[in-house]
Length: 103
Length: 103
Image (cartoon, rainbow over all chains, first blue to last red; front, side, top):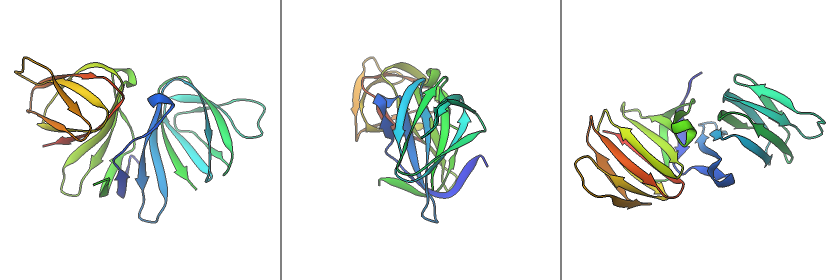
């Protein structure tokens, strides 16, 4: 699916790490929420409140999930899950386009 | 208005200048289109096909419009129009959040 239909989008961007990471919030009719975002190359740590599904739309990242000892590669077309109330480390190798679903 | 309702959003980001400028395309029920984008500090030249209304949501820019001799400051809450089939120069001083309407 290349687009989300019948949604609302918050005009104001979400900005993190001085703009190296940014996203737009998309609100769905069923009350669920996703963000569509971009990550510039770099290394970041994100905290979660709700559980998250991170889908990589373009680009490639290395991710270290809670409790993991090693990094895993997640490329375009792949995704990873992050438990609620936790955090994950991410190394962004190339400009990466992502969709985050709040579960 | 802080959000757009009953719209579609293209998942894939529009990327320009190696990611220094990026946007998401928002499609409206009446067939019109807008983009919500971010510009990192820098100087850029954009060409237009359709006429455009550029609204600065956050940040500040200097713009030189077609036929203009001088730069004008456009800050958050302000906007500028660009004719169809032309181009404009923009100096972005701080990370700038914008909404572009295609007229």
